[in-house]
Amino acid sequence: MPPAVRGGWVENQPINTAGTVTLRSPNPRDAPIINFNYFDEGNDSRKQDLKAVVEGVKLVRTMANGLKRLGLTKEELPGDETLSDAAIAEWVQNNAWGHHASCTCPIGPRDRGGVLSSDFKVYGTSGLRVVDASVFPRVPGLFIVSAVYMIGEKAAEVIAADAKGTRA
Image 1 (tube, rainbow, N blue to C red):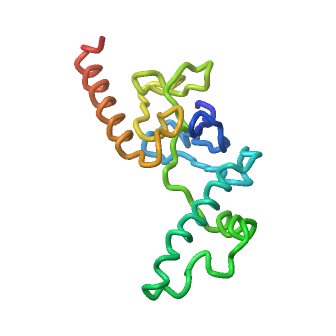
Image 2: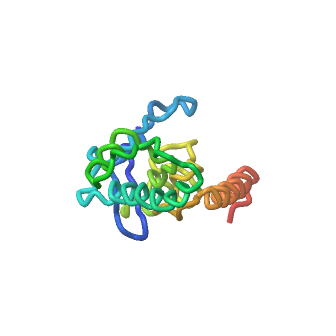
Image 3: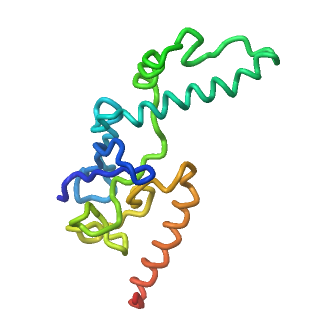
């Protein structure tokens, strides 16, 4: 069984890259074991990912200030009493979950951290390909769905060509 794989880059700067995806078994129907290793569990010693989420909370608060004249009287979460960066960070660590997980099985050479060949096959296995947001060597932006659609289309072409025996 291949080892757990790691990944995660934003703007060419490494952030928390301690997340793992590990195959549970050779059976493709068995869900993999996924551990995101968020925040203090990870290896982001500069806490860039946590700081980014704290700044996001503060930005949304600034944007919502204009709603007060329309009757918005209080913030539900994290709440009006959560003011300092430290308090916001604590709330984020206890409550936040990022839903754009990606870069855990990047396409690329094995010696540079790649997990997949250019035809989406997992190194060291047979009959297994990965086609989702984990194939990117770094996060392709904030709204990744277009990039995921593109990678799906490319993989479909590669898989169909392989099935026909016409891959160049």
